[in-house]
Length: 131
Image (cartoon, rainbow, N blue to C red; front, side, top):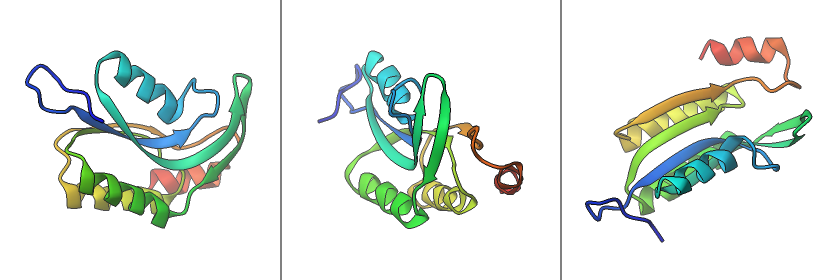
């Protein structure tokens, strides 16, 4: 299930972010990048998008409870060595991710947030940025 680094310890990286059905961005693109490096990518989705190479049509944030459950399920089964955080989608999801980081004490976190898709309002962006 997991790939190994030179020290034979599995290298598992958790990607938290949105789904891009075209695979050019979001969790799908991050997993492709990890695979090229011989690293096993785990994923927690925060939102599902309707998009293509021409733009983002819609963003559908997932309920925070589902995001928390995904984090808990993976943390219970995998030794997560690093976390990359992308699309945050909703302020409540930010809180869930912060709680997950505190609870699971992830050793390395890369924050590369996408806090606004082209279809989301400026008011929503301001609310996310305050978190």
